Amino acid sequence: MIDRSTYVNALLDALPDVVKDAELANQIIEVVFSVPIKALENGNEVDLPGLGALSIDRSRGAGCLNYSSAGAHMQCAVH
Image (cartoon, rainbow, N blue to C red; front, side, top):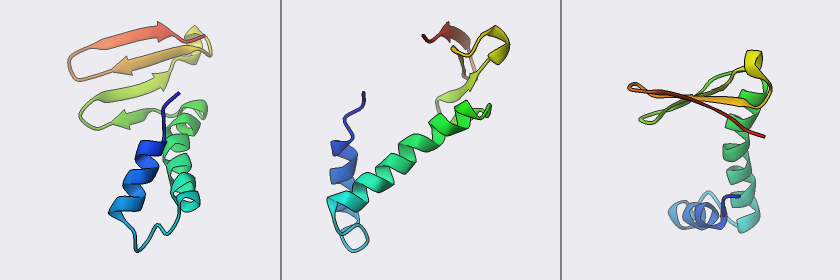
């Protein structure tokens, strides 16, 4: 599990005029983290600029996560 407090504090520090409290910062971080997960669950590919892309290969099972970058392709089963 990722410790999100670093991101919450960064939002509070970087945008004090917009992000007024930790509750709002937590809500923003929750959205940021949930979007890629929902995209994968919906069968979409998630592009990570500069890193590669993630997708789920349902033909190999619900837990088969694919990672591909410009130079490599890796598959692993997530249980």
